Length: 363
Image (cartoon, rainbow, N blue to C red):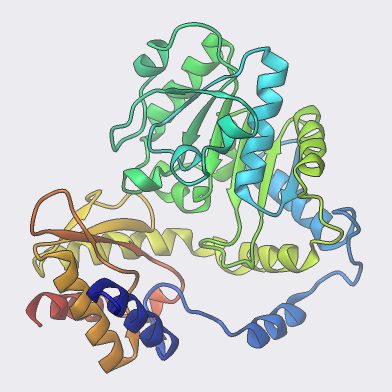
């Protein structure tokens, strides 16, 4: 017999499939997605093992955007970051890598850095904020690399200020350790940081970016950096099984995202600030306040199961999707969810969003 939580998950899934309007992300039918890709192809040449065609064009575009000499396209960010950290470890002759305790590298990758590459993890901090130079300095001995996740998703999508980022970069340089940026959501970070992608990239040795999140690509990631590092990453891409015979559908969708969605980052950040303010007037709390990017956490003074019941019931009734499920917060009786501003969000009025969320507290 299904439990209440299992029943709710099934109801949410069915309701999501029947939605006609979406605040964040829409589930696009496969045939429709393939037709969209066919309409935006710009190069008739199909890459072979990543050489030529849309893949090569995408790599050149990303290298230019991030201000790096070279870039490589890979099927996943997990592979991209494993590869570059392994390269740094082999070069440095040490397996120690400094990361945040809430990093995606540690929480969502089945301990791959240790299990696959035998890297030793040094945690700078596990607090829901960006690490500081003094916390890096407190780790003695040789390090192969230091990583920063911008923004830190499991910390609440938090970013450093520009000055804090510069100081952290300088601390790595003074120590002679390469800084690697986990930029899965770096596209969304530039409005808050107040600097271009290339200016952010200049503070790090290598930068990883994702294409399937805010840019809406089918899948895929890129790693940008010095030519010699990228050349070694390509070898690890092959060793890890990521050098697919052809990657052009992923590259086509990624390039389309760069053309159509990347220019909206300022608008999405501004909308996040406006929505966060409006939600607080409805009785919610948000973190960070104001949001650092297009994404933030929404906290409700109501238990998670109650909020989820209200959210699913509203989805079934209105055929509108407001976002993902609600989870229990650290404070008893409170719950939280992530809210991500996407191009679809811009089709909603701010007061309309606030009213829709307000209904979840009153039903």
